Length: 250
Image (cartoon, rainbow, N blue to C red):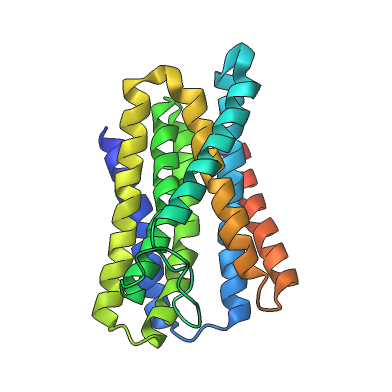
Protein backbone atom coordinates (compact mmCIF):
# COMPACT_ATOMS: atom_id res chain seq x y z
CA UNK A 1 0.00 0.00 0.00
CA UNK A 2 2.87 2.38 0.78
CA UNK A 3 4.29 1.87 -2.72
CA UNK A 4 0.87 2.52 -4.26
CA UNK A 5 0.53 5.79 -2.34
CA UNK A 6 4.04 6.94 -3.25
CA UNK A 7 3.41 6.06 -6.88
CA UNK A 8 0.10 7.93 -6.85
CA UNK A 9 1.87 11.02 -5.52
CA UNK A 10 4.60 10.60 -8.13
CA UNK A 11 2.12 10.29 -10.98
CA UNK A 12 0.20 13.37 -9.83
CA UNK A 13 3.38 15.26 -9.00
CA UNK A 14 4.68 14.78 -12.54
CA UNK A 15 1.99 17.17 -13.77
CA UNK A 16 3.21 19.78 -11.30
CA UNK A 17 6.82 19.25 -12.44
CA UNK A 18 5.67 19.81 -16.01
CA UNK A 19 3.82 22.94 -14.92
CA UNK A 20 6.99 24.34 -13.33
CA UNK A 21 8.85 23.73 -16.60
CA UNK A 22 5.94 25.39 -18.40
CA UNK A 23 6.42 28.54 -16.29
CA UNK A 24 10.08 28.63 -17.33
CA UNK A 25 9.25 28.23 -21.04
CA UNK A 26 6.04 30.24 -21.26
CA UNK A 27 6.29 31.02 -24.97
CA UNK A 28 6.22 27.64 -26.70
CA UNK A 29 5.53 27.41 -30.41
CA UNK A 30 2.63 25.32 -31.67
CA UNK A 31 5.11 23.03 -33.40
CA UNK A 32 7.05 22.35 -30.21
CA UNK A 33 3.95 21.83 -28.07
CA UNK A 34 2.45 19.51 -30.70
CA UNK A 35 5.58 17.36 -30.80
CA UNK A 36 5.81 17.26 -27.00
CA UNK A 37 2.13 16.36 -26.63
CA UNK A 38 2.45 13.70 -29.35
CA UNK A 39 5.37 12.19 -27.48
CA UNK A 40 3.10 12.00 -24.43
CA UNK A 41 0.41 10.35 -26.58
CA UNK A 42 2.92 7.72 -27.74
CA UNK A 43 3.92 6.94 -24.17
CA UNK A 44 0.27 6.73 -23.19
CA UNK A 45 -0.54 4.47 -26.14
CA UNK A 46 2.23 2.03 -25.24
CA UNK A 47 1.21 2.00 -21.58
CA UNK A 48 -2.39 1.26 -22.57
CA UNK A 49 -1.53 -1.56 -24.96
CA UNK A 50 1.47 -3.17 -23.25
CA UNK A 51 0.55 -2.55 -19.64
CA UNK A 52 -3.23 -2.87 -19.64
CA UNK A 53 -4.83 -4.41 -22.73
CA UNK A 54 -2.45 -7.32 -23.39
CA UNK A 55 -2.36 -8.31 -19.67
CA UNK A 56 -6.18 -8.17 -19.66
CA UNK A 57 -6.25 -10.79 -22.42
CA UNK A 58 -3.80 -12.93 -20.45
CA UNK A 59 -5.56 -12.67 -17.08
CA UNK A 60 -8.96 -13.26 -18.64
CA UNK A 61 -8.20 -16.91 -19.41
CA UNK A 62 -10.55 -18.70 -21.78
CA UNK A 63 -12.73 -15.65 -22.35
CA UNK A 64 -9.91 -13.13 -22.07
CA UNK A 65 -10.27 -11.74 -25.58
CA UNK A 66 -14.01 -11.16 -25.26
CA UNK A 67 -13.65 -9.63 -21.80
CA UNK A 68 -10.90 -7.35 -23.04
CA UNK A 69 -12.86 -6.12 -26.06
CA UNK A 70 -15.91 -5.49 -23.88
CA UNK A 71 -13.76 -3.63 -21.35
CA UNK A 72 -12.13 -1.44 -24.01
CA UNK A 73 -15.48 -0.34 -25.43
CA UNK A 74 -16.99 0.10 -21.98
CA UNK A 75 -14.12 2.39 -20.99
CA UNK A 76 -14.41 4.42 -24.18
CA UNK A 77 -18.20 4.76 -23.90
CA UNK A 78 -17.95 5.76 -20.24
CA UNK A 79 -15.45 8.51 -21.00
CA UNK A 80 -17.53 9.60 -23.98
CA UNK A 81 -20.56 10.01 -21.71
CA UNK A 82 -18.54 12.00 -19.19
CA UNK A 83 -17.21 14.10 -22.05
CA UNK A 84 -20.75 14.92 -23.13
CA UNK A 85 -22.37 15.41 -19.72
CA UNK A 86 -19.73 17.34 -17.78
CA UNK A 87 -19.29 21.01 -18.75
CA UNK A 88 -15.70 21.59 -19.89
CA UNK A 89 -13.54 23.40 -22.39
CA UNK A 90 -10.84 21.64 -24.43
CA UNK A 91 -8.94 24.84 -25.26
CA UNK A 92 -8.68 27.94 -23.16
CA UNK A 93 -7.64 30.37 -25.89
CA UNK A 94 -9.67 30.92 -29.06
CA UNK A 95 -12.23 28.22 -28.35
CA UNK A 96 -15.99 28.08 -27.96
CA UNK A 97 -17.54 26.48 -24.93
CA UNK A 98 -19.06 23.14 -25.78
CA UNK A 99 -22.84 22.91 -25.95
CA UNK A 100 -23.70 21.95 -22.38
CA UNK A 101 -26.57 23.32 -20.36
CA UNK A 102 -24.37 24.92 -17.74
CA UNK A 103 -22.11 27.31 -19.62
CA UNK A 104 -21.84 30.10 -17.06
CA UNK A 105 -18.79 28.62 -15.38
CA UNK A 106 -15.53 30.46 -15.86
CA UNK A 107 -13.36 29.40 -18.77
CA UNK A 108 -10.59 28.51 -16.37
CA UNK A 109 -12.79 26.12 -14.43
CA UNK A 110 -14.04 24.57 -17.66
CA UNK A 111 -10.50 24.11 -18.91
CA UNK A 112 -9.35 22.54 -15.64
CA UNK A 113 -12.37 20.23 -15.73
CA UNK A 114 -11.32 19.07 -19.20
CA UNK A 115 -7.84 18.26 -17.92
CA UNK A 116 -9.35 16.43 -14.94
CA UNK A 117 -11.52 14.32 -17.27
CA UNK A 118 -8.34 13.51 -19.17
CA UNK A 119 -6.29 12.72 -16.05
CA UNK A 120 -8.80 10.61 -14.11
CA UNK A 121 -8.56 7.50 -16.33
CA UNK A 122 -4.77 7.75 -16.27
CA UNK A 123 -4.80 7.60 -12.48
CA UNK A 124 -7.26 4.70 -12.51
CA UNK A 125 -5.00 2.88 -14.97
CA UNK A 126 -2.02 3.25 -12.63
CA UNK A 127 -4.04 1.95 -9.68
CA UNK A 128 -5.50 -0.98 -11.60
CA UNK A 129 -1.97 -1.95 -12.61
CA UNK A 130 -1.00 -2.35 -8.96
CA UNK A 131 -4.16 -4.32 -8.30
CA UNK A 132 -2.88 -7.02 -10.65
CA UNK A 133 -0.08 -7.86 -8.23
CA UNK A 134 2.61 -7.53 -10.92
CA UNK A 135 4.70 -4.75 -9.40
CA UNK A 136 7.14 -4.36 -12.29
CA UNK A 137 4.30 -4.07 -14.80
CA UNK A 138 2.45 -1.65 -12.53
CA UNK A 139 5.54 0.52 -12.17
CA UNK A 140 5.96 0.51 -15.94
CA UNK A 141 2.40 1.77 -16.39
CA UNK A 142 2.75 4.38 -13.65
CA UNK A 143 6.15 5.46 -14.96
CA UNK A 144 4.75 5.87 -18.45
CA UNK A 145 1.83 7.92 -17.19
CA UNK A 146 4.15 10.09 -15.09
CA UNK A 147 6.46 10.55 -18.08
CA UNK A 148 3.66 11.77 -20.31
CA UNK A 149 2.25 13.99 -17.54
CA UNK A 150 5.36 16.17 -17.63
CA UNK A 151 4.88 17.46 -21.20
CA UNK A 152 1.15 17.72 -20.60
CA UNK A 153 1.81 19.91 -17.58
CA UNK A 154 4.15 22.01 -19.71
CA UNK A 155 1.72 22.78 -22.50
CA UNK A 156 -1.23 23.88 -20.32
CA UNK A 157 0.61 26.75 -18.63
CA UNK A 158 1.06 29.07 -21.61
CA UNK A 159 -2.63 29.19 -22.67
CA UNK A 160 -3.78 29.82 -19.11
CA UNK A 161 -1.34 32.68 -18.57
CA UNK A 162 -2.15 34.12 -22.00
CA UNK A 163 -5.85 34.16 -21.10
CA UNK A 164 -5.16 36.40 -18.11
CA UNK A 165 -5.09 33.81 -15.32
CA UNK A 166 -2.59 34.76 -12.61
CA UNK A 167 0.50 32.64 -12.11
CA UNK A 168 -0.71 31.64 -8.64
CA UNK A 169 -4.10 30.41 -9.86
CA UNK A 170 -2.47 28.66 -12.81
CA UNK A 171 -0.17 26.72 -10.50
CA UNK A 172 -3.05 25.83 -8.17
CA UNK A 173 -5.01 24.52 -11.15
CA UNK A 174 -2.05 22.38 -12.19
CA UNK A 175 -1.85 20.97 -8.66
CA UNK A 176 -5.57 20.16 -8.65
CA UNK A 177 -5.31 18.25 -11.93
CA UNK A 178 -2.44 16.29 -10.39
CA UNK A 179 -4.55 15.48 -7.35
CA UNK A 180 -7.21 14.02 -9.65
CA UNK A 181 -4.66 11.44 -10.77
CA UNK A 182 -3.72 10.65 -7.17
CA UNK A 183 -7.39 10.01 -6.38
CA UNK A 184 -7.83 7.96 -9.54
CA UNK A 185 -4.85 5.77 -8.69
CA UNK A 186 -6.24 4.96 -5.25
CA UNK A 187 -9.73 4.30 -6.66
CA UNK A 188 -8.35 1.91 -9.29
CA UNK A 189 -6.20 0.06 -6.78
CA UNK A 190 -8.92 -0.44 -4.16
CA UNK A 191 -11.55 -1.38 -6.74
CA UNK A 192 -9.45 -4.24 -8.09
CA UNK A 193 -8.18 -5.27 -4.65
CA UNK A 194 -11.72 -5.61 -3.31
CA UNK A 195 -12.96 -7.60 -6.31
CA UNK A 196 -10.02 -9.34 -7.97
CA UNK A 197 -12.42 -11.18 -10.29
CA UNK A 198 -12.98 -7.96 -12.23
CA UNK A 199 -9.25 -7.49 -12.90
CA UNK A 200 -9.24 -8.40 -16.63
CA UNK A 201 -12.24 -6.17 -17.33
CA UNK A 202 -10.81 -3.35 -15.20
CA UNK A 203 -7.47 -3.48 -17.02
CA UNK A 204 -9.21 -3.36 -20.41
CA UNK A 205 -11.59 -0.62 -19.18
CA UNK A 206 -8.64 1.56 -18.15
CA UNK A 207 -6.92 0.83 -21.45
CA UNK A 208 -10.07 1.80 -23.36
CA UNK A 209 -10.33 5.14 -21.59
CA UNK A 210 -6.73 5.92 -22.46
CA UNK A 211 -7.21 4.95 -26.11
CA UNK A 212 -10.27 7.20 -26.22
CA UNK A 213 -8.33 10.20 -24.92
CA UNK A 214 -5.49 9.60 -27.39
CA UNK A 215 -7.78 9.31 -30.43
CA UNK A 216 -10.45 11.85 -29.47
CA UNK A 217 -8.29 14.62 -28.03
CA UNK A 218 -4.53 14.26 -28.24
CA UNK A 219 -3.99 13.24 -31.88
CA UNK A 220 -6.51 15.75 -33.33
CA UNK A 221 -4.99 18.54 -31.23
CA UNK A 222 -1.42 17.77 -32.32
CA UNK A 223 -2.42 17.59 -36.00
CA UNK A 224 -4.34 20.87 -36.06
CA UNK A 225 -1.51 23.37 -36.54
CA UNK A 226 0.45 22.09 -39.54
CA UNK A 227 2.97 20.00 -37.60
CA UNK A 228 1.56 16.59 -38.45
CA UNK A 229 4.89 15.07 -39.50
CA UNK A 230 6.78 16.11 -36.38
CA UNK A 231 3.82 15.07 -34.24
CA UNK A 232 3.76 11.62 -35.84
CA UNK A 233 7.44 11.04 -35.15
CA UNK A 234 6.97 12.35 -31.62
CA UNK A 235 4.27 9.74 -31.03
CA UNK A 236 6.48 6.98 -32.44
CA UNK A 237 9.37 8.08 -30.22
CA UNK A 238 7.20 7.98 -27.11
CA UNK A 239 5.82 4.57 -28.02
CA UNK A 240 9.28 3.12 -28.69
CA UNK A 241 10.73 4.44 -25.44
CA UNK A 242 7.96 2.68 -23.53
CA UNK A 243 8.47 -0.46 -25.63
CA UNK A 244 12.16 -0.48 -24.72
CA UNK A 245 11.31 0.02 -21.04
CA UNK A 246 8.82 -2.84 -21.14
CA UNK A 247 11.37 -5.22 -22.69
CA UNK A 248 14.14 -4.25 -20.27
CA UNK A 249 11.90 -4.45 -17.20
CA UNK A 250 10.33 -7.70 -18.42
